[in-house]
Image (cartoon, rainbow, N blue to C red; front, side, top):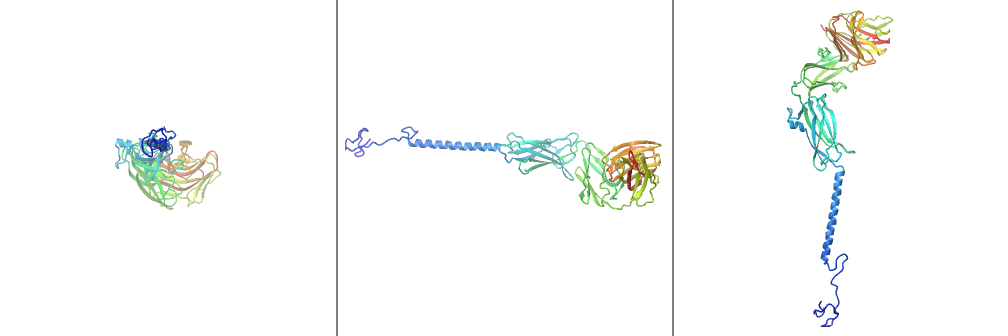
Length: 499
C-alpha cells in the first residue's frame, strides 16, 4: 500500500511511514456478506438475486396457467353447435326437384352435428317434424351424449339419426330437423340449428292424384256418393269423398272447420304402403248431433298439396225423391199398444216401449221398396242397456225381414228372420262408434241388390251379401233381451228409393 501523506509505497505490516513518519491506518479491502463467499464482487450478488426473482415469477405464471387449464376442463362452458349435415343423402347425391336432400320412406335419416367447446356430459337434442299442410307435427325427440374426445378443445362431431321402422315408414312429404345443445340445469333455452329434407316416392310408385272430390249426405258401401250436396240438414252425417290414385307411402289427411275454427277430433289420416289405383277414401263429420247451423269447410292434404270444400248446414233442406218424416205429423205411424208394447208420439219423435223381456216390436212404414237406403236418428231414453233397436228392410211379413240393430251398451248386429228361424248374419259386436246411454245415434242402412251395409254415426260397421229377400217394407223397431223396459225414440227418418 502507499502512504497517505508522501504517497510512497510502504509495507503492509508497518504502522508509521518510514519516510515521513505519518501513522498509517489499515483499511478493509473486503466486506463479509452472509451466504456469499468472502471476496465475491457485489455485482455477482445482484445478478444472483435477479435470477431468483425471475424463477419465482415464472413459477407463479406457470401455476396460474395450470389452475386456468383445470378450470377450463372441469367447469361448464358455453359450448355451441356450429353446423348440420344430412351427410348420407349428400353422399348419395339424391335430391328432389327443389334441390332438397331426399330419402325413401323406409330409410333412417342421419344428421351429423358439428360442435365446439362442449363439456363432458353435454347432450345434444334433435327434434324431427313432419311439415304437412296443417303445420308441424312432432315425430320424435332424440337426445344423445355429445362425443367427448377432444371437442372441449377442438371442433367435434356427433351423429344423431331418426330411426324408421320397416312397418312404419315415413309418408311422402316435407320434413325438418331441429338440433340444439340440451340446456344445463338453470340455463335458458339454447340456440337451435335446423335442416330441411323430403321423403320422396320409392321407385315404382305411381303419382298420387285426386280425380274427383265430393260432399254427400248418402254414400254407398265403398264411400262413393249416392246423394251429393253443398247444403246439409242438422241431422245429417256429412261425407267427404276423395277418389283417385294413392301412390306408395302417400298420405291423405282431412280436417273439418266450423265458422273458420277447427273442429276437435275430426282429423282423418289415410295412407298406404302400396299403390292404390282408382280408390275411394271417405271421411265424415257426424258430431255434434244435431250439427250447428252455419258455414263449414273440409280441407284435404295429399302429400303436402291442400284443397278446400265449403258447405252449409241449415234448419230446413228440401230433397226431391226422398221420403222424409220428422214425426211432427202424427197421422202416419201406428200408435197401437197392448200389455207388451206401447207405441206413441212423444213431442216430435216416435217412441216404442217394450214391456216384456225377449221381445222385438216394430212399426212398418206401409210401402214396398226394392233397393233402398234408410237413415234415422235414435236415442234410448229408458230401460236396460242390453237391448236391441234400429231399422228393418225388405220386411215381407212377420217372419221375413232383415234387421239392423244397435244396443245401449255399444254393440251392433245384423239378423235375418226367415220362417221361424233367426240367423245372425253379423253377430253382436262391440264398437266405439255407438254412443252409449241416452246419447243420439245416427243409423244408416243400405239394402241394394244383394248387398247389406250398416253404418252408425258415419262409421262403416258391417257389409255382407245375402239375396234371400229382393224387396219389402221399411220399419223401425225396439226390442229387449234379458230385461224388459227398453224405451227407444226415433226422429228424422229418411227413406231413399235407389231405383
